[in-house]
Length: 612
Image (cartoon, rainbow, N blue to C red; front, side, top):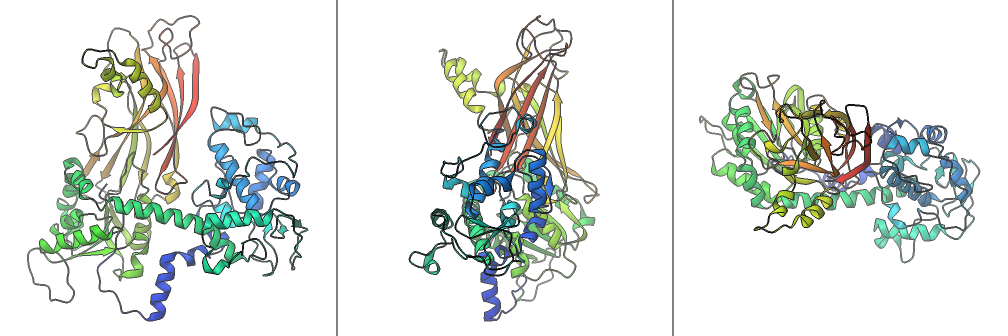
């Protein structure tokens, strides 16, 4: 991944007034975004996501009506019975989302193998007593469980209320101290209930925005206006995201990772060929390089005949490096000097910024860029979430009909055998049997994804396509997906019927520079186990226990469970979901597995949740 980061362009920055500089500083802090209307936030996220299923709704009331009717979760009833204040409602929502993610009943704690079983079980909550301890009491549930949860941004905000009116939830108005009044549009009187200020104080500590503005003992509890509430909620997300981004961009300040990427010939030569071998695309083109790193893609673009290349990166260190590299190679653009007419023009500009803020610092060409190039791919394709920055740059800075390189990406998978685990190593360590260690290591692997090379001979099933992305047209919310597929033993297996053990599923990706834009020479960059290894390797998801597989003609035992040696499966049916995690730039992967025998016998295993 040529540095998952973003940078900015090159044109001379216009002279700014003091007021403009102050506005820019405010934008960099993110306050303008945090103070936007909740409805806008919801719209940006594609609607409000149900607490239990994948449906989205335009308003909070529609969502909770759906939850009550379809999932027997009466949010307003619980709020009223327990007299939850604003922060209690935040905790409840995050608590429920966390349990649903684990396929657990939020009320009784029972576990299920999949979401559909959970939704079939859901029942009305028991009547909690106000003095009783609710399971979402811990302050950890003040932290949003789901990144950019539009429901939390719109919850209890009623812009039609008078300024002095308390926070409203579901048409009721909170007095700001844990109690509720009847639906209102006028000023409410506060009736202390005894616990609201404590919760507010704890939330204030989480937000860490007290400072001088909060005063010596001030809290966010009473008479908090809408703007302050939005800023407080957003502050939690903003600080967490900034921390992750700082670490993320900082990790690319090390030359070791750039040495690894530049030394990956499959990766680097694919981009080189796509840029240098398609003159109809590159001659005279204006090019935006998102996440430029050392600037190698920008150098290729300049060499290919681009008229202007703007390289952007979020790492100050790498911006400095890329600038010096371009200068040393006679390609750095200097608008203060007359450009000499040479075979290779000085066209490369390097800008330190995130892609989302490019237009804050440089002038964008009138019709946008002709070509957007980026090496954004992470492990399992989507790790690091740089794709969202690329899509933003595409929508805001690429001219209509402009080229994006690469323009396709596909995630594929297959089942792997014993050789894809560490078991063979531990079975013979200098002549000693240490297989007990291997079994423990393999068991631990069933809880964590492993990034490693899987040899082609260790792939035991046919390959399945999980999901394909059209980078020229896809939307950001399409990064999250669920794929169902079937795996059968590959035809290269032994002719004599025998049992083959499948230890898990390995995923990889291919990206394409197709003839849609690369007309002279389309290119495919593959990270497949059947191709030359790349620095991405493959991503391995190990089953809780291996599954026995065989061809159709295998003689089955009369009473054995599916997937065992006596009753091997002819097919593994799997469902994999890959979604952006609550932690910025991470992804969550869930794997559901069912073994199916030739006589129809089936066996399903509990869903496995991995975080990358």
